[in-house]
Length: 419
Image 1 (tube, one colour):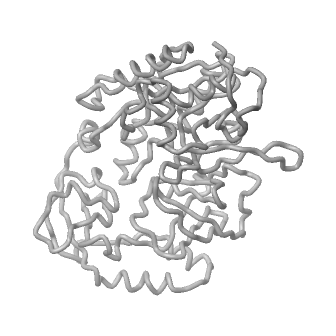
Image 2 (tube, helix red, strand yellow):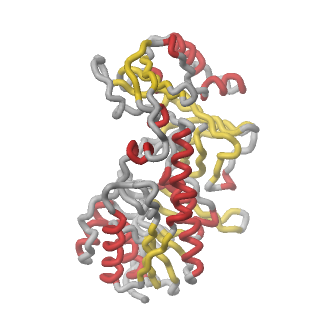
Image 3 (cartoon, helix red, strand yellow):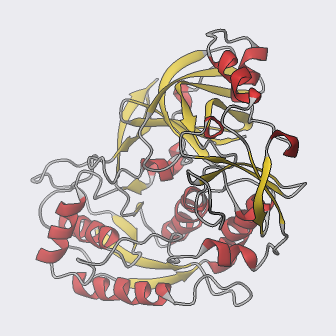
C-alpha cells in the first residue's frame, strides 16, 4: 500500500513539505505505541509500508513467563496494520533468537557476567535476520520505534552514517543500537527519533491506534516481561553458598584510591585502574547464604534476602568458581565504584570506523555503561590489547558483560563489551 501526505520526522527527511521517491520499508511492529506511530509516519511520508511482527519465542523447554504477552502484542500489531491499511505478517525467528540471545544469556550468567540481551537483539536479530528478511521482500529500509536519529555526511567521497541520540533525552535509546555497523545503519530508519514520547502518544490518539495508551514494554525485545530469577533457574540450578560482607574501610580500597589519583597512562597504571577488586572470605564476615552466585550481578540490591544491617546490602562481586557473593553496606560503599574499565580488542566496535582510535592514541569522550545512565566524561586510551576507559570520576557497578558506549556530543561513535 502507498500513502502520501506530509513529510517525515526522520532526520534524513526533516521537512513536512518535501516529496520523496516511493520506496519500500518494512517496519518491525512490536505491538507497542512507538513502532505503531513509526509505521503511520512512514506511510504519511509516502513510503510503501509493510508491517512485520517478529515471533521470537515458542520453546516449551524454557518458560519465559506465566503469561503470553507476545500473543497480545502480535494481535495489537495486526490491528494497527489493519487501521493503517498496510500489509502485515508474522515472522518466526524463535530458533535463531534462542541460539543467539537466550543461550547467550545463560552462558554469560553462568560465567558470572551480566549480559545485555537488548543490545544483542538489535545487532543479531532486528538488524541482521529481520533486515535480511525485509531485503528479500524488496525493501529499501527497515524501520523501528527506537528513540534515536540518523544522518549522514561525506568522508573521502563516500557516505558515512551517524547514529545520534533521540531528541527526547528521557527516552533516548541510541545505547541499545551501539553495536550497529555502517551497513546496517544505511538501511535503518528511526521515524520517532525527532519526537518526544508525549508527542508520539498524541499522534497515536489522533489516529485512533489501539496502542495509544499501552504501557511501555519492560521485557526482552518482542517477547515481553521476564522474571529473571525464575528464568535463570530453569537452566542454572540452585547452589547454596556464602554471602561475605566486606567493610567499607578494607585496605583494598585505599590501594585503589592511590592508583586512581595518578594521571599516568603507562600500561601498569592502566591495568590497575581497570582491574576489578579481588576479594577473599578472610576480608569480611559471613552475612548469610545465597542460592547461587550466578543469579546475581554487581550492584544488585534485591534478592539477597538478608536483613538486620544498618544500611541495605549491595553485591560488590561474585566468585562463580567458589560460589561466593561479596556484599557491602550502602549505595556509597567504595567497593561499588571503579575508576575505569577495559574492552578487549576482539570486543571493540566502532559505529564510525573513520573515527577509530589508532593503537597508542588517546581521546576524550562521554561514556555510559548502561541504559539511562548519564553520560560521563572519560579518556579513552587505545593499546594493542584493547581499549582502556578512565573516567573523570569513579563509576558505580561496572559489570563485566555489559556494553560501554562512547559519544561525541550526541553522536554514538563506538562501543564494546566490558571485560
